[in-house]
Image 1 (cartoon, rainbow, N blue to C red):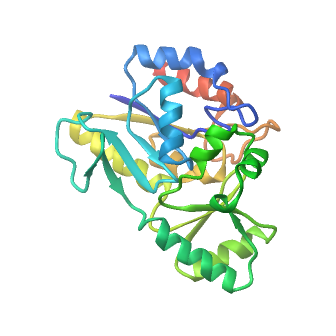
Image 2: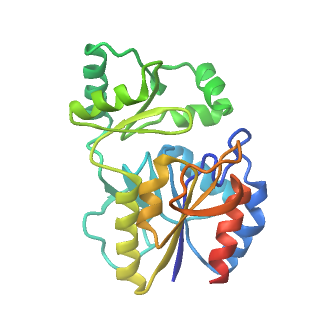
Image 3: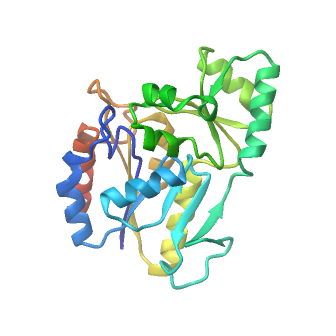
Length: 259
């Protein structure tokens, strides 16, 4: 069985327009072969649900940088250890939850760092930073497991501070992120394990664009980086997909289908 793990922003979705037009033909081929497309994103559960509707998929997904895995109630035939029923899903949660994360935010501020969290911004501010419309910006603020923020502080200083108080740090294309006990790589490893229990032999690829995706790329059998908007790659360690954003995504996926 084959599986595709994918980032959204600047990977399957265009960095500026959020269009996946250039990946639509590849998506059609993937669906025809019944290959799961598993979104692994910093986006919220609510955002990913909306993108799944637009793309036309109903596979498991990973939200908020690996904080939780959600999969439809009858997706797997076997009981999954550690999964709890939550509405129409079963969920595996790695994060202690947003309230614990916000305690970390308070400590950072007490230590002199000026930051502004996504949930503290107006919809207009979120739209300006992200180029999202108001509906999607509202979904972006529905954070359950980790917090993202902007700051003029040095990224390395922020990382050191966050780690010193017992939390983890990563940086995406637009925001800094503070989290605890989770990562994209950890979630992908867990999903590969679940798919192998259910289906046996599994071959996987992961597609991303930034340092925030490296753990996910390492956890799959093959990791592809798409080009960033300036035509560069975030690393020379991984396979290089020929094309920026969704064009690169289509290249990587078509190569995978051929194998």
